Image (cartoon, rainbow, N blue to C red; front, side, top):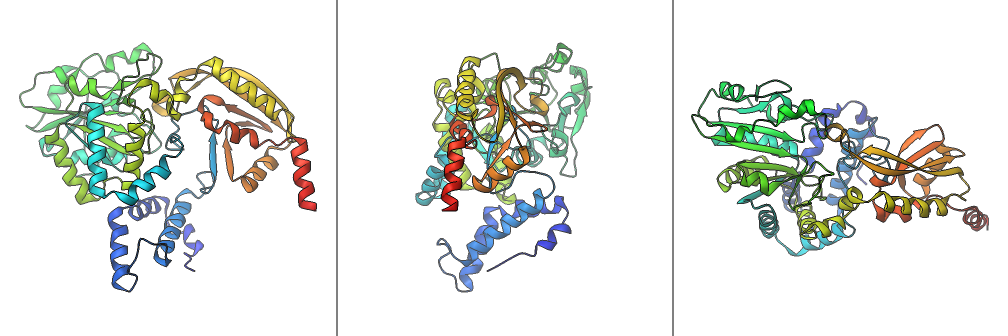
Length: 457
């Protein structure tokens, strides 16, 4: 049995571990190992075998190295997110619809990579109105690809107000500044004028990159950030206008409660390309989706293939299934991310009452009560966007003992706001499909006694 020495975890820097982990997940590297294995006598690499087991162990070990000391969530545990934050940068995604992963695996068994890519491209173009589409492994990599666009070879201009982080490691500047030509900041934090824009143009091939939301739901002092539409400014030479829409949607959600931006509206009003995350409002797996003019996307596709940045076929299948399941607002509301964002307070109260009734007599619990409070739907760019919510405040006899027990016996980690032995769980960020799983984590005294008796027997 193959084992990687655990002592190496103490000498590999986290940044290096992250790079190696990205390498291990590259389809091209996986195929190279398969080809090498065939040459030394393992002809059938699709069946479960020793090399696949070694490969999986290597990935798991690198993941544990990367997360050591940084995350309390075991990698082999199911997670219930009761923090109130739906777009949680530490968790890195949103719940997928039930059964999507299994359906995607079955698709992968029968379809070629080329067919999967073409089907996904056609679906994304149909829903967004784009001429072409490209899906890569992350939003950050999608932004970095812009450096390979010939039509913007003189550099990308970024208004200073858009240098906003969307997680602990990423903002437009450090995603773009991976080449010899760094991004060009223009304007100030609160304002970018036409003169600032024109002054930044030093060559004949430039691009402008914007971020949305740069400060979702902020006060009116940030209004000047979007007062001037740089796409409408006349320039001596053509300029490529690209946008990163962290709040991008493929369909019209017809709501003013959330800071949404429909991709089709941006493409039709002058944007050359739009980059959106595969999760967030779309509700699929985390990845980077580039939509826009075929003359630009084709150049980025060639660069993505050379750099091995194309999304894994399994994730492509998942994204295809999620997008296909939600052609309109009603169907989107039935998916996990849609259900969490659009649940009304009355519905949340009903869920809370059912859960309170089910768990209040549980042996580990001292008290349970329902509270009403508004919470931000996420961190960083989402921290000013709040929705009314309902939470359960659960007082436990011993939080640590209960937490260790459910991780050991149920394989579940519950994330919430803890104060001593009190756990606050916000129902808006919990997938309604997980309510039953949550209730099962608080057995009644009768169930506990029955379990104990069966063990003693």
